[in-house]
Picture 1: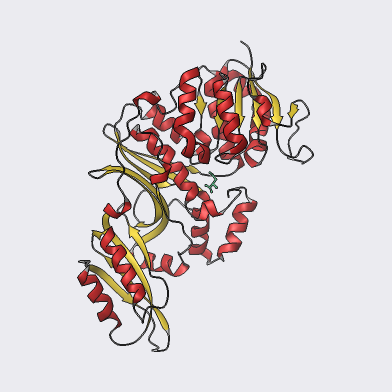
Picture 2: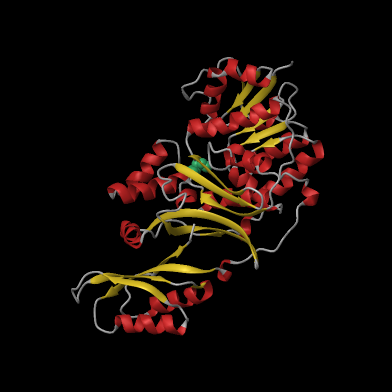
Length: 429
Ligand code: HSE
């Protein structure tokens, strides 16, 4: 059988990892695919850079777009990144030219996924994007194949390795935020712009992709509610521990009576839950379906090896002849079900106020909670110096999000409250 010929655009952490896996596992891949997997051409910005892999056998392409429609390229592997620009031109051009595409680019798919799926439907090619979500975890395969018989009702998980790594280090060693982030960057976990990791944008890209695949609706990134981990302190992680919770940045997508919810924000989850022990750079995705009940996937969510593992899995699929619709259904079958805004959430909350320790503060706070019909489950104040600003922390019973937002605004207006009030949603997951 003819070899499967690859053109790789982008030779960063993942690209170099991919070249290394294809070279090191050549015989294994030949045996598993029934044909050779050959790298024919490579592209990157800087030809001279040492990437720790031998590229001398491959054609060097200065402009990634020269891979589009090339006679000797069956699969364009896009590892450039970015939601627009060359990555979009390359992927869209390749799909229209009838080339298969493998990409790790979650931003691109979160923003332009439906349009790209349409292009793939038209030419009948396969788009592999396993590496775009949760690194080495085969969650796209899980949804497109393993769980294809299910009506999915909810999925949630830890979708950003860098922020999980940072929060784990804050909890375990009290390491400074910047130091841990620098280490995540050194290890190749973080995005080119790490604000995407910390601010929740990267997890939101991944959640949008998963939600459209799971619920059969056009990708809807603009309606993902996104909050990052910037406001979380070691003190909150410690209070969470005292209340029996741990803090995780979660992506949650579910079908509710109000529509499809998509949200990324820090959560407190019980220490006894299935993904509570998932620490460091590890990701986890839990999928709930009408037939399977629940399926949990855990693995490394970032880094050269795990991400290259996912890219190679897609290449193996194409080499074996697998052709699946991008969203598991033709684009024409996607249904634009309404989305449910975050204000419709109903659940429990952790609240931390930094207050001046003087008589009457709790009465003022309680009055606001009473007005907003929010019932306190537990309350804790530390410190006793009247000159000192001390944390006043509470957990609540289930309350409406819009009531909580009003309460937070009013807490912030109190003279005794010295910092922007913090809330973390408590999820029974
Ligand atoms: N920056 C991402 C993360 C890499 O930390 O999870 C994988 O998408």
